[in-house]
Image (cartoon, rainbow, N blue to C red; front, side, top):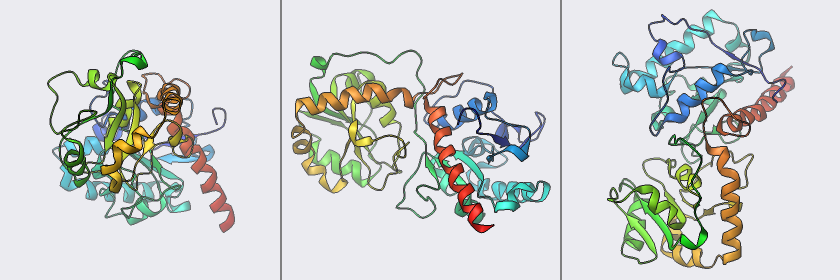
Length: 332
């Protein structure tokens, strides 16, 4: 992949009226949706980019959903029309989209409104590769194996902290807003428990301390299946517990999630303590050790490091590049 994979990025001038939407940001990304900006910045500087479209395996549609929603000229309500116009322009000004009807094109979006952004351009949703954080195969529009799941990661500086297993006294931990039936069920079942610590509001103590003090850290579906909590858990060496049905987990084509996490159906929330306690100590140690191994795949860097989040996304795209080529060959 490193030697041969090539991506053509549709070019835009620095003085383009929508340069803020189409070009990589010139600052350090932050917040819940930083993955989108980190990927674009890393790709722009990488050896994967080619200026020769004839040698490209895939074509990148560089519009930023996160930037569009904050642009007063567009806003959330205008994103669909913006992308409709964008696809119209590239399909009329360049020949590449029309060769495959977009099957060898991709875009990246971490904010949940990304799944609605394409409602006026169905051919993008159906044909193009969607690299998104909100990757649920329960909702129409996301197609597992055609599309790819990207982790939602809160940027942190420095190396992940170390914590002795003996200091992880709490069985499980969760904190977050009550914005879904899954989270409400979690609070109802375990809100007053002494071993599973569930909070339905902001902690008064540092969030990091709770993650470091827990064996398992709960990722519970909110408005969407994705949150930054999986990345948080991995960073602090805590075994993630996934409470989000129909979640196409990030890098699922590459990683064996059951080796470093616990996936629990939301209907089994009342059985959560029993499920976790039935995992013996040796098995917990195995999963926690695997957490320490895989967490490097869930980190962004200013300059990509082998096997980090950027390279993992690129490998997911590489796998799909092979699928696109196979499909095109079958048509010829």
